[in-house]
Image (cartoon, rainbow, N blue to C red; front, top):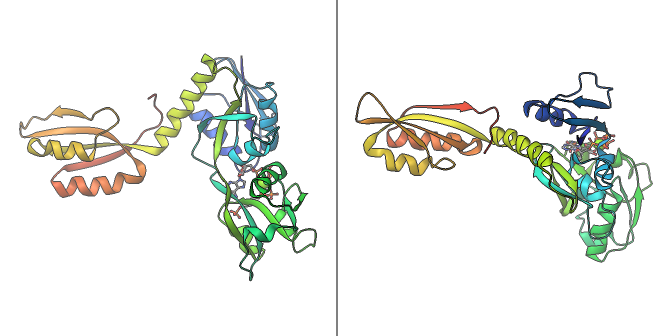
Length: 286
Ligand SMILES: Nc1ncnc2c1ncn2[C@@H]1O[C@H](COP(=O)(O)OP(=O)(O)OP(=O)(O)O)[C@@H](O)[C@H]1O
Ligand SMILES: O=P(O)(O)OC[C@H]1O[C@H](OP(=O)(O)OP(=O)(O)O)[C@H](O)[C@@H]1O
Ligand SMILES: [Mg+2]
C-alpha cells in the first residue's frame, strides 16, 4: 500500500486535499482525522504538519508527500540540500522566501553580515548564507517572524512572502534575490525507486494540474483558413478537425493554455473563425 503525507493545516492543506479528491482519491471529512484509508486505490493518507512531511518522506517511512518547495529545502539533512526530491510541481501555494528588514534603509545582502537574523527555516537560511560567504547569527523561531524585529530579538528576518501584506503591516521591506521561489510540490525520498504505484499517483495529479492550466477550445473555421487557424491552436499532438455540413467550413478542437486563451480567441476571431468556445477540462491523462 502506498503511504502518502498531506498537509493537515496551513496554507497548503485545503488545496492539496482538493487536488487529491479531484484525482479520484478519498480524503478526510473530519479535519481532525490524521489518517484516511483509500482501499480502492490501495493508498493510505497521513495528515501531518507541513514542516514534518519532508522528514517522514526523507526517512522512507512514507513514500510520497505534498509539501512546499521551501519546506523541502529546509529539511535537507546535509549542506548539499534536500533529502527529498521533487516529482511534480502542483501549481498552487506560490510564494517566495526572502530576506527583509525595516523600511527606510536600502538594505543590501552584504548588510546581513554580523546581524541577528530571525527565521523559521534555519537550514535553508544557513545554506544560503554559507553560499554567499556571510556570517550572521540565525535565530530560529516557529512563526510570526515578522514581529521579531520590533520585539528586539532580531535585526533582520528571512521569511515566506505571499501577497507581501504581512511585511507591509510590520513596516518591513524585502531585499536581495529570493532565496527560494516556492509552490506546493509532490516529493519522494531522493534516489528511491519510482514504483508503479508512485507513478500512478503522480500521473493522476499531473492530470489535475494540467486540467487546471489548460482549456479546451472549439471553433468553426473556413476551410481556406485552416492552416492559419492550426498555427494559432496547434494543440498538444495536433488539433481535431471535423467536417461540417457546409463543405467550406470545418470544426476545430484543440487544448490551449489558460493564460493564453483570451489572446488566442481574439486572434482566431480576427482571422475569421466563428463560434469560438472555451470549456474547462476537469482532469485528464496525457
Ligand atoms: N501566505 C502564503 N502564501 C503562499 N504560500 C504560503 C503562505 N504562507 C505559507 N505558505 C507556504 O505554505 C507552506 C507551509 O507553510 P504554513 O504556513 O502552512 O506552515 P506552518 O508555518 O508550518 O504552519 P502554521 O502557519 O499553520 O503554523 C510553505 O511552503 C509556505 O511557502
Ligand atoms: O505575504 P503574505 O500574503 O502576508 O503571507 C506571508 C505570511 O504568511 C505566512 O504566515 P502564517 O499565516 O503561516 O503564520 P506563521 O508565520 O505563524 O507561519 C508566512 O510565514 C508569512 O508570515
Ligand atoms: Mg506558516
